Length: 578
Image (cartoon, rainbow, N blue to C red; front, side, top):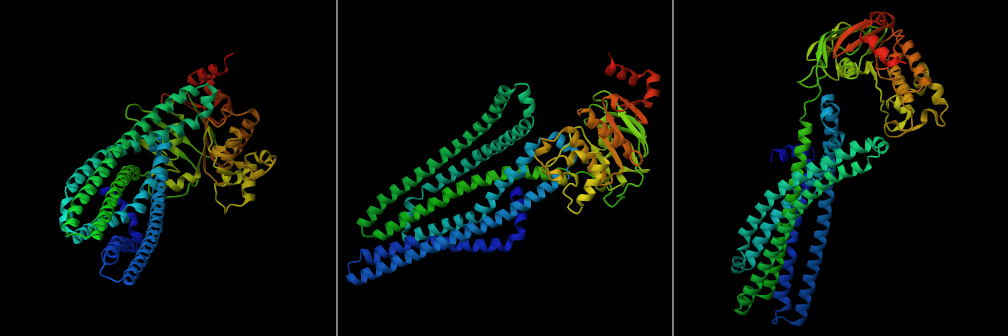
């Protein structure tokens, strides 16, 4: 009920529309009760009434037929209005939920994405919200309709013949027990189904993204077996859900047939004893059918409620994830010089191992600084700490002498550019990817940024130039070109601090020379930090910082470090051994 209550808060802006929808549903309930009563009147007063002249009987039958047609037309119109209005409301509410959910996901810390696969998050935003839509489009007003219809049918059945109603009352406690059992098992089944759908989506997202590796290592059979396992788990939970329905539906149908049999038996006796008219018996059977319809409908709606509850539980679990702390949101937003300093910084991702230990380093503009070390030494973690993606457990990070937490970190990131090894480009054009969909930035400004990083001539040679289409993640564009585009993007937005994380590790010599030349030019005015594994790319750096086991162990230029014959010397010897 807490989850449903929380969902209903999203309906608050549409209260007036809900009131109109409920009024339409109540009108529909009233009109739905009329046809059996019209037919009952037609049978009792005109069809079987031999006391009336024939012309009056035909006239009365015609009048009842018109009433029946009008009531049927009214049912059609009211049902259409009800479906249209509730679908509109449901669509608007789910639109709001999806926006809020995605807005919240954008504000989650990087540590959250480290632990949750993208397929799972996609399921929450796309699939689970769609399940919630069913609740608003087909449950709320339908339940009101069903409840009022049940009450109305019972009232009409009692009005037609109280004794006949009492004779079929045995089905009510049995139906209550069946519904309670259905409720218990259906909830368990739905939770299992939603969990396994999330697993299937997560598996697909991860393994389709890794398809080049799958094909390279001929791992198709392994992938088929892996997917078969998660798919089979989903199939099994779907079958468990089906078993619940397979038992409940026939139970309701059997009870309906028993009730009909009782009506025929008792009704025949009452007709023979002249205490019941044939029209009353027809109306009673018709009302019993109307009575069973909302019962079956309520079971389906309960099914949707369980689906909604399971989905809402996952949606709000994601929505309740703590947002990233952006430091002082009213704090400083501009970097003036770009001096970055680590003071006694300790950092770890998990409780069991420190990644960085007591780091004391300083970066400043006009100096090209490189950070080197073996894999896992903590180089990339330094980058993640500078742009505030993660926060140190101990120590301070200062930018222009001011602690990172005193900045508005959200605004700060616009001025700290990171060029990773695997640059992500978005679907669109090269122009849109350089200016990141900021349409107010002119094409000429984009061209100037591309020229500054020596990539404009490469772009110019493309058939469509800046309007070359980019597909998912920049497929079809080389790694070096993607990195130069990312570098141009940073220049365009006038970043004060540039961090290149293994930016030249997987590119050709020509592109590497372009990046090195661009970086050297940028470092004259900006703070540039190169994180590298290949030492050949950093030999010309003004200063090289060597990180080993999370600690800064050496510092100096290439010549000085080679003379020390320490860790840097050993790494260099290993990489260039002949």
